[in-house]
Length: 378
Image 1 (tube, rainbow, N blue to C red):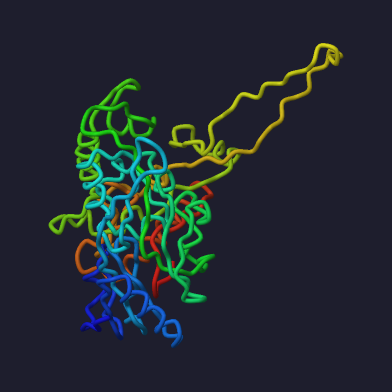
Image 2 (cartoon, rainbow, N blue to C red):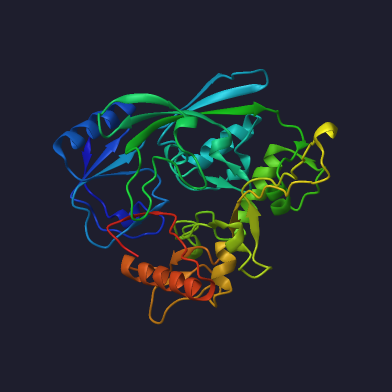
């Protein structure tokens, strides 16, 4: 793998922070990536893998180790497991939105609502990316990865990745290490072959975002175009001329709380149950009925609540920034912490901490950061 002149990570991350690391390599093939990682792990050297840099928040001090840029690309069509489906094996460094565009152009349904998400295909399963009700878990079949502990390359089924809301066993959560330290080499998706015509739009969340009636039918290209326009209005499509897009996307995760805690929040706070409500049905044989109906069994459920709503109603509006700071909340979407131009990681971290503190003081809930933090603390 060719070693290249290290460049500032501020040039390789969408949040635009980070100095140049000690060393930098660029992997254009899977073999190069595997070879370099094995050598780094054998030497016990600090390492960092970067794809699109869209889910990283890097500190101001130089990274004292080796950064490996994943530049592998390629889409390989494969037969689906059942009629009306097709599989795609995608190299880890392939641009995610370019992959979505490919699927739409070829009439393959399943990831069109995730148009405009920055980053690479290899990062998608790490945090189970999703948008408007679609998540990678719905179409992911398997990943090819290399384990840090052994250096072995293996194919792992999606069911073994612990995919949940913006998480997996591969993700480096703030304050913890991954359950399975590994690097994704390729992903395989299974998508429905629907063609270029109009199809029913599944999912209440997607229909609501696009202003569609329950019985509406539109084409994949229509969905992609309107999702891109919706994300652009929120500053969630990368644009070098728009500081609102100089971010790591949603900086804070929508909170997952118990149904009981959700009831303590204002009724107008948007929330979505993580599991559908099923009205329990009790069947008592007539011969065994003694006139007493047992009380229903209460099952605890979890609810997702809107972090953006909590931030706004904690008094931090769109465009909020601290005095003399070059970091600010997006003027379009309060969930994005943005670099308004030349902001240090310290300035961005200060705003993120202030946001957490205001929400916690107002609602008793500590928002968790979504990006991976490297050399920086909140």
